[in-house]
Length: 627
Image 1 (tube, rainbow, N blue to C red):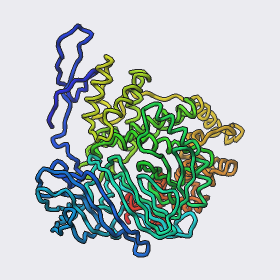
Image 2: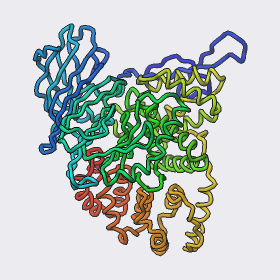
Image 3: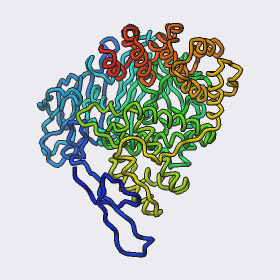
């Protein structure tokens, strides 16, 4: 561990109790400082590439989509920057490299792929001449290209044509493009995608709205992005506008519902711009994917990939849209330099998301979201253990799959850190700080230490404020000064819940005006030893097992499993697990089955469902269920 002397306006963490004073000026100008830990090696531990030696600046991708053989075939050409480097190193995994050329004349050269690391894959080393500026790689994907999910017609909504989509975060782009796969390395790109004439291709770039006659599509992303934000989808897609700069891509049977659900997207975009500056990505569109998508959404620039599970019919789950839109600033514009710094993406984005929702739907609604977040975070930390190092915001994922860091910690603990700063500084001051932060770091990838220095100089010292950033960022658990949200609506729900549990009397529940969030809270606070009569009464009266809202279904099914009621609705639970691929739902439900001595049932359902899941979900569940 080494230390760096920095200025810090605020309380001191006992972890790093080395003080100094800045002298000069009157007493009100004095400020204190600490020595904060700085990593011995600040490079990204999840990439083979050595960007300081030779780095990508622009990518030109040319791929043909072969649905019959389930592979992409073609080439990628890079413009590179180096100072007489002897080689450039790219990340690959699950790819078949055919040949490599250098320069505009495409002089063929040798290359070497190292033995594959179980996490990072192979280092593709390509020798360079002193003046080499262009490298071209001919390759094809394989069945081990885990970023790709090939869906049969039966696995799509319309069940007529096949579908392909990619998921690159955190380090899977290297499984469909040989690249420098680090969030700290940014480059612009162009692409040509060739597919069947009756299918539409879209990417995280400027997109077509109609199918081409020959199935050839071209794309351009003029803003530099890290590799994990390169995305491709190909399917029988149609487009509908939701505003001057916003729209939806979806299969025909889903398009109308999606357009209605996302009708507030343009309002969200306008609200976001007013708070934190110009949206720099042209259009903001959404793509509704088939149910196998492992996440709620993925913030691919210009085109958010979204799960159909948020199509609840009442806009109750569109916080996800606000979240992915917010990533256009926190994540896409300013990016975590390594996956150890994920909270710089996700904590900021949850905060920004809630500000958008508050502006559109009011503080009362947002406080419900905040309280759900707080309760879930406390529960997660209790489950993980208060001293668990993975409850720190600044993570240490070296030697581990960075997917291990995709818990709610960087999202929700990061959010409450920013809420604490807002409370301390005042909203007006904090908004001005965040707006300037996005401007000053636009198209950059930064580490936690850089943010600390910036916040101390531009927010704390500038406003003579005291705050212990080190406790929030470098220590485990949840700091005692974490702000606790208050919700009158949830308090009413809790009173009704207690009354219902005591008497099993549905007259105690006045749910006519309840939002989805109130139902979720009601279900989550019900005891796990609730009687079968209580469960049957609730289900019969409110049809919770067949709710259209996936969030309500997921928490209800989990409660049913722990309460021994699942045998009554086993078919509904099984259908849900087979249809839905979102890992947020899968992990708790399979865990509940496993913890209630239904391990063989869990394995039986999983064996049927597994082909429908993306490799990201498969990886988690294979380990859980010993597949």
